[in-house]
Amino acid sequence: MNDLGTTTEQGTVRLERLLPGPIERVWAYLTESDKRATWFASGTFDLRVGGKADLHFDQDNISSEKRPPDRPKGKSDFPGKITRLEPPRLLSYTFGATDPESEVTFELEPRGKDVLLVITHCRLAQRKTMVNVAGGWDAHVGILSDRLNGVEPRPFWTTHAKLVREYEVKL
Image (cartoon, rainbow, N blue to C red; front, top):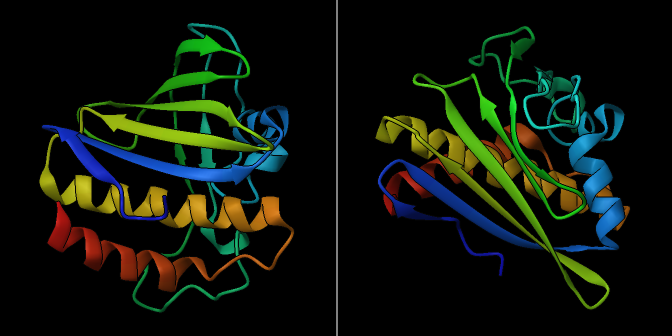
């Protein structure tokens, strides 16, 4: 289950991970800004179709690892809009960080006391973007898993760089 993500069609990456449940807890980490900020990005979500899904990234605060000197400093904001919503099993929103605007879908499925998280990110126009997005999701979900398991989160920057190299070969 912890293999690299895959590409299911042109411009799409898919990642599956088994996380500790229950489903409502994982849902909260997808939808509540303060919880989402611990593994991905904070920001306002208006939980209705057509509502905003604005993300505020600050990767310096999701693990204890310091930002490498070659990485740009600063925070970044990306506006989005919720396109599908079926609490607590499905959330989709546009992702303004790519050009053209892409869309990410989170699907949650109970598996005993665990939860299968499936992330599908589509409309990624360039291979380089697909590689970076796949490595990013994989690194971020690793940190989510650590948080849900109550352990110190793995280093974001080192993990992301390693995964991008692996996805460069795979995708």
